Length: 317
Image (cartoon, rainbow, N blue to C red; front, side):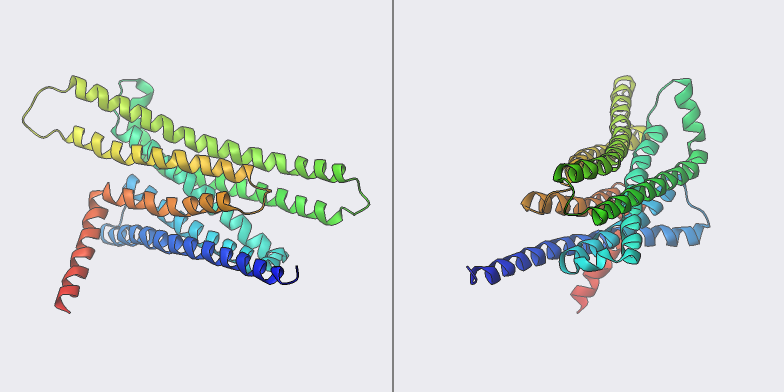
């Protein structure tokens, strides 16, 4: 029996190292992809002295995802190899709230991006929709500010509930009834988990309705479009936006399921299911940002130029 303990400890260490290696690769790639978006947009900002609404959303989305991936990796690294550090109050109050804030921030900003595509590109004769189409550029900064305020408020609430639960566990004694302790713990966990589920669902609904409205608009446009040999720019805009939003809808649907599963498995020990969930959640910001690059002519052109320069340097050497 004594000989089996070291082997078991070694397996646990190998599992943690494998998990961290996979997540590290995804985080590095995701941060590089989003850093590329941020750099291209910042250069354009310096050159033009201004950014359009789409670029503003993409810039904030890139920054949010870089920060989210960074804090996700830090938290996973510490929780696997130095879990005692997370019990230090200063570290706990710094890493968890900031990680939660940037996570909710990039979810809501990405939902705003889908809503922006829908309002800007879809064609409906409804007076309210036409009003939104005219005012959307002025509304974007306020929508982004509102998204950050919501993310900040949620991170503060969840952080406060986590600290309350921690203090409750610390003050519970071994003489207390087991069921009383369990019921009190479930009571403290219910409200933050419910809040997380509501926020995930709300952002998911924004993406769903944006994709459905765009799809319906494209169908109507194809149906009413007159036969013409000239290239229809409106049609191209619809198709390009639909590729971006529909691909995001598929990814966001899987992401939503994974986020719900993180709520379900919140109090369970790590297993292969939680590993797969965290792998997808870490891959999502990078893969979706890569799709956004190829759906944006400016970003795609900048990426192709860089790839061409790298290719030329390789052949020269």
